[in-house]
Length: 458
Ligand code: SF4
Image (cartoon, rainbow, N blue to C red; front, side, top):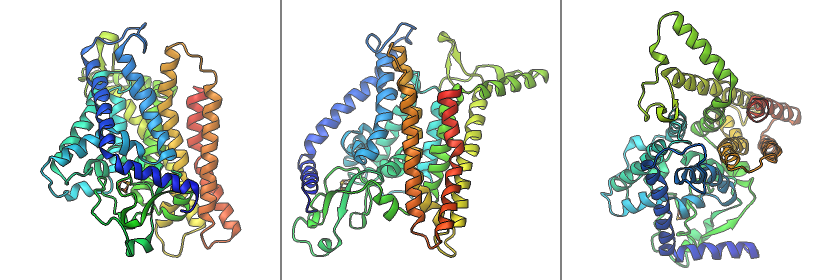
């Protein structure tokens, strides 16, 4: 920690620690903007064709939430760690605020289930598509507002001044956790100093419940700075963005599922279905098949807006068949893209195993190398909405395609570099290492093909 950069980051963390009330005021300001953009558009008429961010609040809210907020919060994770969560997130702040005044109950066992990050992400992603969350204020209120209400209820009931919601149930906690492992700084614990504290041993309230003494990475930490200098042992410290993936992260089954089948599966299906000619063909084939058998109810758009998109006033309603088609497409993408990625990983691990009888531990460790690719996929998918909204505002977007393919290429190359380094720690020789690496790379082919179809072919 001797470097000037190290001293500067540590001082910055001390500043955060010492100005917690200021941070809270900033968070209340964000809560106010968030609530305004979430609630007011619900009471306005749906925007017409000429509406723009400059003259229509609903379009402005749409651009703020889906054009800026989501894609760039995602980008902030590998750049700053989970600073978004600790400094700005309205939901995190509200759940902690409710917890400060709440019942302080013990966290129930069902909530600690390790599958929530994957399940909550997959369900929210699919539900968002079914109700067209990128377009309609009612759907935004249901998805984001519902999540915020749940966060506050969980905060009120469980933990003392804690962020139980963020740690266990937030639908994007798992994604943020993965991406923050690439952050170029983290709160580092000096084991030696911890054992022999010389200063500050008063308790620290780590709201997201990070076990401070054993903290090794940045995945769970919300970067709030409260533990900065604790026992003279914790300091915000620069590091290589590859350090956690290569040397620390072991991964587990649920993280692997989230990477392969969540981010590189469900999310791809959710982003691609609306652009896919295969989706249209499948629907036409299914509709013909149903009509020939006199089964017409799936073709009716009778579902309410909170189950399937239903806005007849702007000629946009999903039939039951539309809903089933979306689910089928997402499932297909999950099997084809996520499945191929997983098979590539598994074969790579078989050829160059971690150790004898390591089970799937080697697969989970290797899966961590996929984080850059998985992350860029979600960013590219979310930023497609940004680009659509910019086009609607008349902005020229010819520069977007080369930028997209450049980012995708860089992320895949980074994944391959991380995989090479992770495989280098295994006992197998060079030939097996190369073969493993090639198998992992081959598993990524459907992932790259999916983005090429989306951005170039369709
Ligand atoms: S470990 Fe906890 S207390 Fe320390 S900075 Fe991270 S979130 Fe804050």
